[in-house]
Image (cartoon, rainbow, N blue to C red; front, side, top):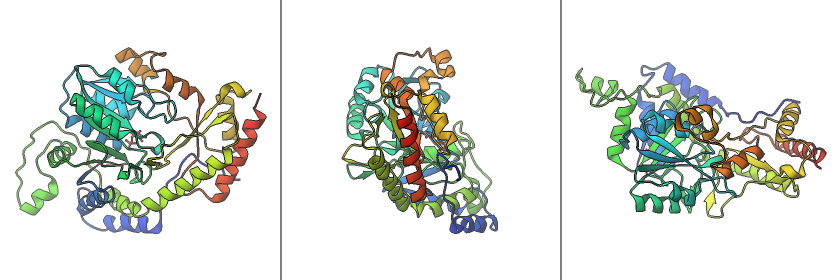
Length: 383
Ligand SMILES: *Cc1c(COP(=O)(O)O)cnc(C)c1O
């Protein structure tokens, strides 16, 4: 039987035709599809503005840049995330301050955020781990009280919502990823969504070397004049990618429902296993289920997580671990003197975590096979 990968994109004939049409046209980059994708995306998440970038990492960098952080400024970020959530802070010369997560949801703990605030804190980055929106009402209250910007790394949570408000409108700047395993894909790509027109102008400029107009705008106005007004980067996304994104976006709600169905099936299939701790979901959110991370109760298992991971991989189940806490990576230990033992909940969770395959292209049979094999590997490994 074919192995089931940890994640895989769904590419339709319509997607391929959309990219094909761009390739036969004249604007391979910064063409009409960029603007159209941005407008459609803003519409879907019910936000005012969206700025597409070459990746979510670029989008996070741009989000940090428009906050005008100074060296020595601090930004609070959860440690249980992909490294890019914290790297964007370092790009600007600011200092990442790692906060712990809540033990049930593994989302940024607002209480720990409050403990980590100092006079130098400028912003909070919340990460919608696994696709569950963070506690944005509490985080917004804290941010407002201390005059901080609230940024959402929503790389996992497109399609989710918090108290009926869609992800994309929950923070001041909201960042999405279109990497192939994320909710929708453009190959590589990202988006910043905001309600601020001023920030939107800055984000567009930052994506294009800090230049005040793009090539297409100059072409249309019939002028060669431009001014570089601040230091920017080439973080542009191509027209082919945006055509793909537009086409993918049409499937978003169907795919979110499919992910939710798979998660519900896993919940039911594993509900009686005492050696597993299943994802905890707040009642007031819609979870986008980018990941299905379970936690092993290691004291009720004979085998270690390492052994279980390899056994499941050998049996064709594409399990993974999300994430090694960022403060434990060598770069952060060397540069920022971060230490083991300082963020106990994320550190403990990391020892126990295992993400099961979840993606809309999974068949019902795939889902049942994951349940059967995980059950048999875990029961055989039980004390
Ligand atoms: C995937 C991911 C990113 C980076 O996305 P890219 O588009 O690959 O740059 C950032 N943060 C989180 C939480 C992610 O999962």
